[in-house]
Length: 160
Length: 272
Image (cartoon, rainbow over all chains, first blue to last red; front, side, top):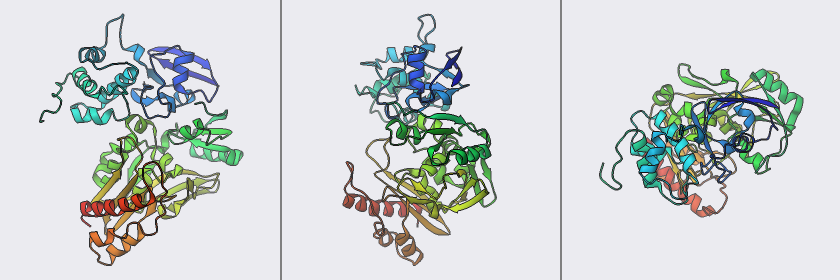
C-alpha cells in the first residue's frame, strides 16, 4: 500500500507492506536510526516519537496508521549541530549514561512539556513512566527535563 | 517482532466497518489505537487476514452530556477521557482511571472502545464501566443494540460482540458520589495484579480487575452492603465467586487476599 508522511518537515511517499511497524519505517525506510528499538513490546519507550505533536511508541503503531501524519524524531531537534535546549539540558545535567534510552526520553519529554504548562517534578516522574533507563539514571533525567522546560529542578530528596 | 501478513483496509464510518466485517467474517479484526491488538499480532497470538482500521472515524470520538448520563464515542482516546472536564466533573472515577492506563504514549493512541472490546480481565477500564453500571452500544448489519456492561464480558478475551458488530458508544451514569480505584501493581506501567473499582451512586457498585477470566462485579460485596453490612464485613466477601489465576506476580490465595484488602480500602475511601 502507499503511504504519504511528513517526517521532520520533509514529505515522503512510499509503497509499504501493511504490517510494517512505524519504527521500522523510520529506521529502515527513511534511515532515521536515532529512534531505537528496545523492548519491542511498548514497555520501554526507546522508540518514542511524536505523531501530530504527541508522543507515541512507534513499535506499537503501523506505518499505515501514520499515513497522512506529521512526525518528529530526535533527528529534527538539533539544527546545524546546535543542540535543542532540551538536549542541552540533558547534556548539562549528565542525563545519559549509555544513551540508548535518550532519544525516547527526549521525545517523551517534549510531549510532557507541551502538555503541562506549569510542569512539576511529579509531572515529569509520572510523565516518564513509560520510558525505562536500564542505567537507572532517572534523577538526572528528571532534572534535565525540568531544566529544559525552563523550570528549576528540586534537589533530590529535598522537601518540597 | 513482526506481525503475520494481512490485508489492510480503512473504514471511513461505522457503517463501512460493519459491511467490511460482514464481508470478511471472523478473518477480520478491527484496529483502533492498536494497543491491545498489535501486541497480540506481533506475538502472533492473533493472525487476522484482514485488519480494518477504524482509527480515523472521527465521528466516533466524542464526549456528550446526556442529562443523567455521559455518552462516550468508542474511539475516544484514553488521553481525551482523562482530560475531559465533563467526566472529571460528572464521572470522576472514569477520568481518573483513564489516566492510569499504560503510560502517556499508550494513552495518546489507545481508545476506551478498544479497551472494552478487547475485554482483558486485567484492564482497568472494563471494571470501572462495570462498577458504574454502564451500557455498551454496538452496531451491526441490522442497526444498533444496547448491551449492559454486566452482560458484555463473557469469557477470556470474549465479549458479547458478534463477528460483524462494532462497539460504537459507551454510556455511563453520572456518578458524583464517593468513589475509589485501587490498583495494586509492582511498577508504574504494569497491569493491575488485582484492582478494585467502587462507586457510590444510590447503591454501591464494586468491580474487580484480574480476579478471573473476565472483569467481574463483586456481587457478594454489593449485596452485603445493600443489606446494611459494614465496609469491613462486606469486604471480607470480596473473593466469593472469583476465579483468579496464579502467575509470576501472585498465587491464587494472594490474589484473594488482595481482593479483600483492596475492596475494604476502596469502600472506606468511597465512603460506603
